[in-house]
Image (tube, rainbow, N blue to C red; front, side, top):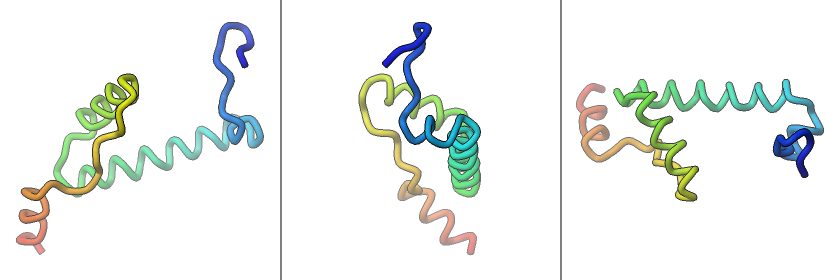
Length: 77
């Protein structure tokens, strides 16, 4: 459903208001950012790739460490 030319928000966002939906978004972005930084990965590159994939109808890139990162992280411990 559209109002004023804008797509409607998802039902869960409408029910709790935009503050709740925005809080969930920030929570998830902080988690993604922390995970990528722990892995030594670039946050902006990951988010850019995730957005490009979403627009293309593809799944988001994995947050799991690559084989190379897994080896590096286990050696650091």
